[in-house]
Length: 475
Picture 1 (cartoon, rainbow, N blue to C red):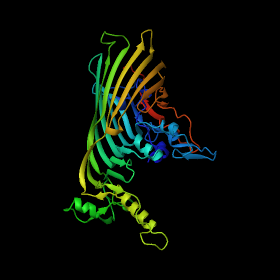
Picture 2 (picture 1 turned 90 degrees about the vertical axis):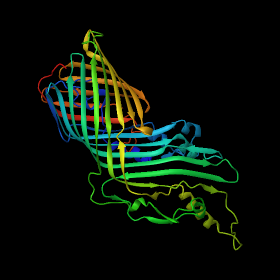
Picture 3 (picture 1 turned 180 degrees about the horizontal axis):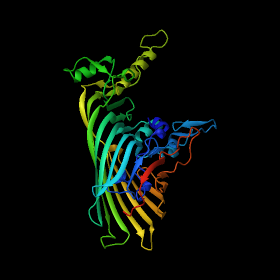
């Protein structure tokens, strides 16, 4: 899964350019804080070119999975026995994540009215992530006679269309508030969880393993299709005498979609505020801001459910092996039986189709900006971003230097540290009258593989072309 995300996530659209958070002329500032205004009378986005980007984020890097082959022949995986084990394992973290958050602006515009600044947009959005604990890589690389406890292996992906309406209002000279309402139309949702995978390999005469795994898939018209019919083992029937002897097992290759469309609906809110301490008569040039984004949910109408039954697998070696024409059971048959029993660890039984409600995963932004009293066109900003999404949560602290030497030009350079490691970025925003172009990165791409895949998971690129209206306005 990690390699699949690393090689495909580069095609996804980055949601927000945090390096531009403190730029007044950045068109999409209201996406990071709905209290933010815009330094023109309004704008209209280009449907195809308004907000384009590419990137992914995380602390599980391609260079941690693939290495130069010690024999000098191309690349090899971290499992190669000739690679130094300690060096390889030091590259993994307690929680290894790869995350993507995408947004494609279909329609968007903003205008001044109702004593504030108003925005409207229709966007296609998605987020996805995987979480792999350190212990799983430890099992793969260092299979030893000991007890392994692997928890919180999983993946999630959600896609939806967002119709948003926002308003930013100047309450007085110092305080500004903003809010945005979003109508959400769910397209698809999938959640995979693997918890309490317990491998006890410490005993000399037997190995035991248990696992709890589940899958949820939500999409209009989605069905499991033809399913395999299996029988429970005798041991399972002894422990669950009231259970039916047979069960249906998921065959993912047989899943089918008939008449796809809107699979769910929901709503979300963004809330934000800005406080200018200088206009409050406290500290000249100091501004504070905060925003809580995507506080909402989607209710899915058609959710397919599947889970395994958590049966304990015991392997106590091969017995009475047939050699030549002697009595006993062939080793090939015993290997087949071993494989069948191992598969029981993750075989998923289908359950009743249900309705589900899932949150989007909220984002908290807290910003502090200080403009030099002697030259207020230069400011320093600190933005703290926290994503609240269970095992896929993350945090970042980004320090930026912001310069607006002219009304039609501004730029920022930034550096960040957080859950996903350290990175540097920047943005250039050119916005004369009737024209707005921005180019930026939160995470400089760095080295690329021959297939143009970033060797580090933190990499993105943003580009946008929009039409602003009116002359610059002092916010």
